[in-house]
Amino acid sequence: MATDKTFSVAGISKFAGISKLNGSYKIRFANDIMRIKVLAKSGHEDIRLADLEGEFSKLEAARMILGMEDFADATAQATITEYLEDNAPKAAPVKAPVKAKAVKATAKVTEDEDAPF
Image 1 (cartoon, rainbow, N blue to C red):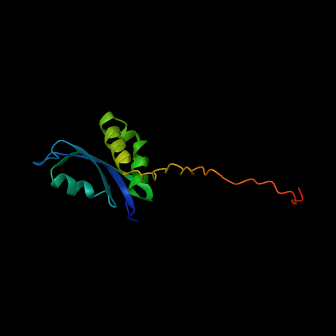
Image 2 (cartoon, rainbow, N blue to C red):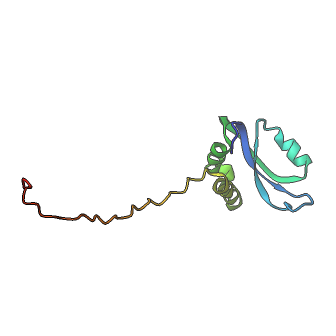
Image 3 (cartoon, rainbow, N blue to C red):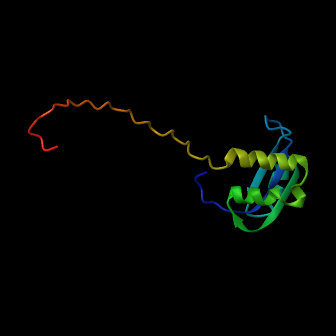
């Protein structure tokens, strides 16, 4: 998510219209609780939105509503958890350390009578 948008309202709704999303729940973000009217007019059911205590990113807002009493049922928990899993920042893959190749040292040893050692 490469956006700095913040939201003061978050929740879930079930789309009951005619499409591939029929009957599926989805997490919703808004800046006004009156978003309920727009969702209801668009064919959504079981609309549950909560006013947050400030403005938060989508991930922060999702984490906040995950612990709220209004979203304690299994359907809401599954919807929010799925969103968090799908949108959580991915850790960069850890690269395996590069192994150094051993080099054989070859040297000629000669005996020199005039050598100091």
